[in-house]
Image (cartoon, rainbow, N blue to C red):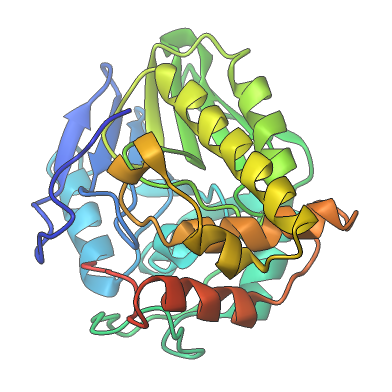
Length: 314
């Protein structure tokens, strides 16, 4: 398990642009905590394909500027790995791109909208900028293949997992995987809006891809060991959920009585509560990815966090 940097830091380090191959780049925003996601892009002869945007107006502008330092070709295509704002809020800044995502990604974005329209009680002090909702307008249900010249980019639906609509971008000839938030490197996984069991199934699927380089949704670029780390945590969640549920404890009570042990090295530990809300739903026999009381789950997370909003330095 990778410990990225001090979670007490009040300012994020500058994002880094990392070249993964002759034409594939990753844009990494550490420390990878709330709102600090990873993105990337593939450069072709006639245009650029982008994987996700960023949480705030300022951060997406910085991402786009980093692209222009590599190539002045037009950005023709944008892939969203899922609906969360740290991966989609900046979509509107690419007005000439075809935005692609899962059908449920579009649906969820239209229902939730953007933070400035529907304020989120989880965050405080975030300078959102002038955000505009811009959901995918090309959608698919299972698999879709894109090409950047001769570079094949396979999109595979893997949900419900982190959300109902997770998509990975797999570049087979270069063994590069953009996992979206199916994987966190150094941070606590978060499946409150998806599924614990579904996430474990998605991790089993990810193991079948012979990936040499993984760009996780959050945290440093890594290899396939991170898949096992995520699996260990989610099985841990299932175990403590089963125990707490059998004792009649609430998700918050179970979380407060749990020793995180080695998982305490990961930042955003309050996510355990949201994960337990989801695990309890599955123990009740509810459909994977079905709606739960998000307001209650978030309130419990903030209680676990000492009554404070979560640390977001995006």
